[in-house]
Amino acid sequence: MSAATPSDLFDPRVSVILSGSNRALLNWVAYSLVSHHRGGFVWGHVRLPDEILEDDDLLTTDVLPPERFLTVSPSELVPDNFRGNVALGGLARSEAEEDSLRRFADFLSLPDQTQRLISELPGEGPAPVLVLSGAHRLAPLYTPELVGPTIRRIVEFGGPVLIVWAESRVGARSEFDRILLLGSDGPKNWKDAVLSVERGWPTGPLTTGTEHRLGDLPPVASVLARHL
Image (cartoon, rainbow, N blue to C red; front, side, top):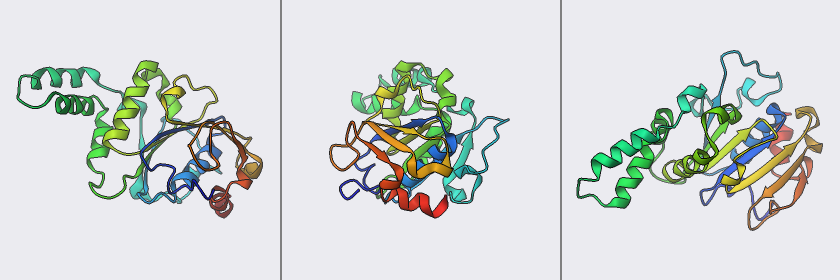
């Protein structure tokens, strides 16, 4: 991956969705993509109260630093466009520029938890990748027309985004800048798992329409080999 290493896949800021049917390996591959990013990463996981993780899942290990990992319930990530619109209506009577007002309203429309996370990010240097695993659990809360604007606002105000979607079918995946599909039966056979690039990067091996065995895709393979 000489022309597109994990350190620059998210620079400039982009939104990436990684989907597939095996949750455990999806999380490991996501980690391999963000672990070298020069801005670091913050990992959120949408967790259900009765969720049981597989023994070989990344989230059962101590690989993710505790200060970079948080769990949230689906209800904590519900968007609030009404609040943003109310704020816009109230502020429109001031002398601030319309574009600034719109940006403020867009920020307020993000979920409270997302606003708090963004407000705590460093103000200087490369923005960390904002990873969200278990994102398929938000599907009932987000209509297709909400997905694109929400993702773009998070990228604008927070940083690059990597969504980990543990289902093969993704209704609104066209709203993302980059689309990766992972075919696999689990971490034990990770070397033969195939990463398909539905919408890729303009340079490097991960261009649109390409397919790669994870075992042939350094430095992703080097990261997985250390842990699996």
